[in-house]
Amino acid sequence: MKPILDGVTYPVRQAWYLARFGRNRPDRLMDSPDRRRPGAVQRHERRGRTVIITCAQGGYALTVLAPDLFRVSAFPGTGRAGEWGVQPFSYAVDRPDEDWPLCQMAVEEGESDLAIHTARLVCRIEKATGRLTFLDREGRVINADMGGAGFLPGGAVVWEKRIQPDEHFYGLGERTAGLDLRGQRYDLWNQDPHSYYLHQDPIHMCIPFLLGLHDGGRQAYGLFFDNSHRGRVDLGATDAEVASFAALNGELRTYFFYGPRLDTILERYTALVGRMLLPPLWVLGYQQSRWSYKTEDRVRKLAHDFRRVYQVPCDAIHLDIHYMDRYRSFTWDPKRFPDPLRKIADLRADGFKTVLIIDPGIAANPNYWVCRSGLEEDVFCKFPDGRTRFKGPVWPGNCYFPDFTSPRVRRWWAGLQQGLTEVGVAGIWNDMNEPAIFGPFGPTIPDAVRHAMEGQGGDHLAGHNVYGLLMARATHEGLRRQQPEKRPVTITRAGWAGVQRYALSWTGDNRSTWAHLQQTVAMILNLGLSGVAHTGPDTGGFSGVASGELFTRWLQMGAFMPFFRVHTYLHSPDAEPWSWGEP
Image (cartoon, rainbow, N blue to C red; front, side, top):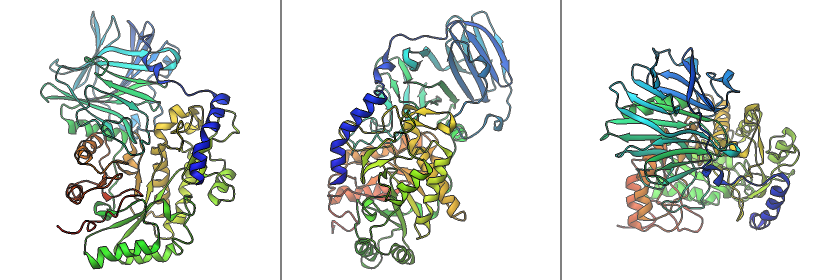
C-alpha cells in the first residue's frame, strides 16, 4: 500500500516542486517557425583535420575523423569560434579524436561553394546559404540539407535534411512502428510506458542514430545526433520531403557516416561509440523469469522441474522485486529468502546462474542502510537550491535517486554490487532506469533537477536520456571491480547511444499477442542497427496471457534471439515451457 499511497499523493509534492523551481519546458518550443540559420559563408580556415567555416550568423566546424566519417558542429554567432575543432564532451562517444588515423583531405573553394574532399566523400557547403550536401566521389547525392541547421528561441535547436524519393529509414533504438521508420515522428525521451502498445512512442530506449537507404539500396548513410536533451526526429510526418532532428537545448552536433553498405556504417559507428564485450557463454542460453518467483521454495521447485521432471535446458533464473526486503535494492526479504548464499550455491551446483533485479530508486528512509550511506556520501539528485533532494514514489514508496552523471556517485554505486557478488549473484538486471516514477502526472524526474554532468553541470533535460546508460555503466564497473576474472553481466531496460559498452538489453514490457510476436523482429533489428546487438524480448509476452501455441511459437523464435528469456507479469499464470501441457 505504501507505494500506492505515495503515488497518489505525489502530484501535490510535484506541484510544489514545479511552483518553487520552475515548470517543465514544453515540447512545442521545438516547433517554433522562428529559426535562425548560420547564413552565407564569409570565410573558412583549416586547423588540422578540422575546417572552420564562419557564416553571417554563426558557423560550422567540420572535422574529418575518417574518409567516410565527418563530425559537423553548428553554432550560432561567432563567440565560440575559439572552441571550434576541439572534441566536445559526450557520454556516447568512446574514441578520442587523436585515436583516429589522419587521412588525406583537401579543401577547394569555388565561386558558389566550398568543398571538402576525402578518398570516399565530398562535403559541399553552399556559399549563399551555408547548407551542406554530402556526395560520393562520382558526384551522386548521399544526403543534403533542406533547411539545414537552425537555432530556435529559448535554446532549442533543429537540423533539417532532404528525404530522397525512394528513401527508407532504420535505427533510432527501440521503436514499435515497424522496420522502416519513414513517415512518422519519434520522440527522443526514454519513458516507461507501463506495458506498451504497437505504434506507441517513445518507450524505454531511444538512440539518436539513424540509417538512411536509397537509390535502390545502393546508397546508405548514417547520422548520429549527439545531443542528449529531450528531442524529436521527424521522418516526413510533417513534411514528406523533410527529415529533421530537434532538441529543446544543447549543441547542434551530428556525425555523418557513409557506406554505401549498412555493415560498413555500423562498423564505423560502433568504432565511435563502442562495442559490446564478449559475454560469458551462459548468457546466450535459455533464461527463466517472472514478476515474481516470490519465495525460495518456489525457486527451488522451478529448478527441480527444469532439471529432473521435464529435462528442459536452462542456464539462468532471474529474481524480480519480491526477493527484496520491502522492495529495497541490495536487500533480501528475511522470510521469503532467508538464506540467499545457500540458495544461490545450490542453484549453481545444479547448473543455474542467478540474476537479480536492481532499481535506481532508493527508499527515502535513513534507517535503510543504502539510503543512509547515500545521504552520508551526498549522492542523490537535488534541485537548484542545492539542498532539496528530489523524492518520487517507486516500489518502496518515496525514493531518492542517485546522480549517475557524477563519477563519485558511480563509484559509490559500483561498491554496492559487492554484497551481491559475495553471495554468488552472476548478473544484475537494471530496471526502472529511464528513470521511471509512479503517479498520474509525473512519469520521471522534473526538468529543474540538477545533475553533475562530469562537473559541467546540467538539468534533467540533459541528464534524463543518459540516466540508464550511466546506471548500467556504474553497475558494470562495480562487477568488473569485484570480479575481475569474470565477464560482467549487466542487463538494462533504458539506455542511450553507446550503452552496449556496458550492458545488454531487453525490449521492456511487451504484450502476449501475435502482433507483438511479429513486431519483436522489427524491434530487435532496429536495435541492432542502432549498435545494441545483444538484445531480446520478454519471450511469450509480459502482460496478458499467452495461449499455448503463441507461447510455443515465441519460444521457437526466441531461440534465435541474442537474449533469450521468458518473463511475464504478476497476475499471469505460470509461463514455463511445460505450463500448457501437450501438444
